Amino acid sequence: MPVEIILSVQVVRMGRRGSYIMFITGCIIVLATLVLLVKHYEARMVLICSGILMCIIGGVAMSGLDAFAKGMKSGMITSACSSMGFALAMRFTGCDKHLINGLAKILLKVNWLLIPGVIFGTYAVNMALPSAAGTAAAAGAIFIPILMGAGVHPAMAAAAVKCGTYGSMLNPGLAHNPFVAQIAGVDVMDVIAFHYRANIASLVVGAVALMAIAYFFHENKGHVAEGLELEEDFKVNPIFALMPVVPIVILILGSTGIVPLFKMGVAQAMIIGTVLTCIITRTNPGNLAKSFFEGMGKAYGDIIGIIIAAGVFVAGMNAMGLIKAFIAAMINNPAIVKICASVGPFILGLVTGSGDAATFAFNEAVTPHAEDFGLSILQMGSMATLGGTLGRTMSPIAGATIIVAGIAGINPMEVTRRNGIPMILAMIVGMAVLLM
Image (cartoon, rainbow, N blue to C red):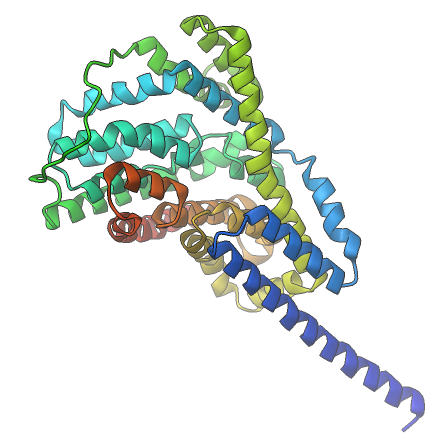
C-alpha cells in the first residue's frame, strides 16, 4: 500500500478519534454546567464561562466573545425592558395592589370557586405584570390570606397562587415571545396568537386538577389560619385597577385589527400605559420615570443578561460540535424531537428553578432547524417556552415558590407536592394542542 494512502487513513482515524474526544469533553462540560445551575450558582456566570471554555477547547476562542457582543444588541431589548419598566411603574403607583385587591373582593363573593378563582386571578395579574416572583409576592400577599381565611390548607393556598404564575406567556414583553418571533421572522403578537390556546388549555387542566386534589384530600375547607389577615379596609379604585392591563388591551386591539389606530409595538404601548397611569394617579412624573428606567435596567441585567449568556453557551456547544451531533441525532430519530422540545426544558426548569436558561439555549440552538423535523418554528419555540415555564412553575426552588411558601408558612416542597400532577397534565395537554 502506498505511503500516501496509509498516512491519509491514519489522519482520518485520528480525526474521528479527536471528534469523539471533543464530543465527550463537551458533554462533560454541559453536564457540569447543569450541576452548577442546579446548585444555584449564578446562571449568567456559569453559562458564559462554560461557553468560553468550550470555544477555547474547540479552537475558536473569539466565538464566545463575538456571541456576547451580538447578544448585547438583542432584538428583545425593546420588548423586555419596556415591559419591566412598566411593571415597576405599576408597583410604584400602587396600581398593581388595586388590581389584586379588586380581584380578591370578587372572589370572596363566590366561595366555592375560590381555588380556581385564585389560580385564574393570579394568571391575570401575571399577564399584566410579567414576573413570576413579583406576581407571587404581590398576589400571594392578598390571595393566600383569603384562601386560608376561608379554611383552605396553607400549602394548597400557596399552590393555587403558584399554579397561576405563568400568565406571562400571554404578555408580549416576556422575553421568550419576541425571541421566538425574531427566529421565525414574525411579529411578537403572532407568536402569542399561535400558542394562547395551548396556554389557556393547560391552565384550565392545571386548575381543575389542583381543585380535584384539594377536594380529594379535604384541603379545601376546615383549616384554621392564624397570623395572616387580609387588608379588608383597602379601598379599590377601579380606574387604578385597570391601569396595569392598558398596554395589553392596546396591543390586542391593534394586532387583531379591531382598532387599527392601536397597531403599534410593545415599547410604545408600555409608554402610553405609563403616561396614562401618571395622569390618572397624579404621580410625580420624575419619580415615575425613575421607577420606569430602573425597571428597564433590571430587565437588561436579568433577562437580556440570560439571553446573552445563553448565546455564549450555544456558541461553545457549536465549537465542540455538540449542536451538529444533537441535530443529527434528532434527524435520524425524529420521534424524539417533540419530546426534547417540551420535556427537556420542563425538566431543566424543574431542577434549576428557572426555565429561562434552558429554554433560551434550546430555542437558540435547535428551534431555527424546526422545519427539518417537520415542525414550524412557532411550534417548536412555543413548546420549549411552555415546557420550561411549566417546569419552573412546579419547581420547589423557584423564587416564586419560595415566596408563596414563606407567605403561607410552609416548606416549598409542600407546594411542589400539590402542583406536580397538575403541571405534568398541563404540559401534556398544552403540547397536544400545539401539535394539532
